[in-house]
Length: 113
Image (tube, rainbow, N blue to C red; front, side, top):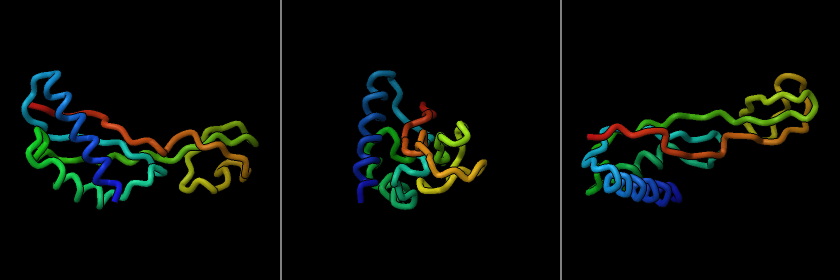
């Protein structure tokens, strides 16, 4: 389960930011996860509860924000939302799409004390 290593990375960021900015507790962390990031959200939530024990985010609420998949259609020149990497363009039906987003995962913000 690679979600555990992802959450351990987030834990490291939280600890580093707590030291750098002088906060002692995170009450909520909002995490943006792209549709194509390959992250299982239930596994991520489970790993969150385990990995955050003993950290400033031990009882923090994890809010996962879903980001859509996006691609540039070479046929109509438009950036469109897609549900799957192999989907055709929803506007023109073209099949020449270059993924432009949806594979990211990043901390959007944290509420801290």
